[in-house]
Length: 311
Image (cartoon, rainbow, N blue to C red; front, top):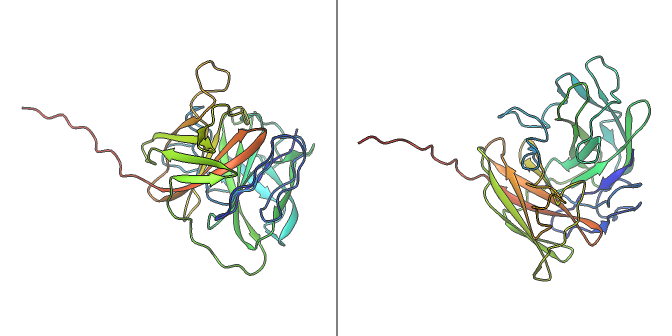
């Protein structure tokens, strides 16, 4: 299996673009795992939520009202970290997925070209990394993570154990030792810039679901030749401020289906687990580099239910 690191982006700084292929080290200012043979790695700091809607019927397979990533154990599967406290800098991050029998799981179904998607986010949602570790023969997953700043982090794993037959997301806390000053969640904004690209988001976050449209432009011109990244034109991770309830959404349509355009618009049907403030992270690939655009949105009121009126 290949190792992929699409590293996070730090708040109040443009997200660095990284080559979409090859092995690269992350920018010093951003935490990034090493990437061996996968699409580029890329630093982004923010927050994320998990609802894999749109492209598939649901990436996490969570029941309605049950947010992903809040539990370390689900359906008998446990995220077992080698360490929960580390020093700032590069760390050899290793973990296992333990099955109902307590043994490390080695048999997974593929989810968008990978057996496991690892998301790392700072608790205050000012740091975000999307990476793909390598699985060793004994079921241990390993990747080099570059986390230079002290603080509280949450790690999420999107997995589909073959014996379970569906996708789940389980999460665990990770602390990077040292003094740190918590930061506020970035202000609400529907437009962001990253590496010369302007990305806008239209639509509302609603618990009952709604359509989000993200539009990518470069130098004021629509980008109409987005490249497939992990079998989609975009990946959207949403995290709720306060508890980091997690939603991972893939877009409507697929590259090569003869219907879905390669930009500038990427559409996602997205449902969030409840009211609150959310940080959205869009991964997209263009000119052989993966970039992450980040936004902060709050939920919109629920639509009023329709009533039949009788004369």
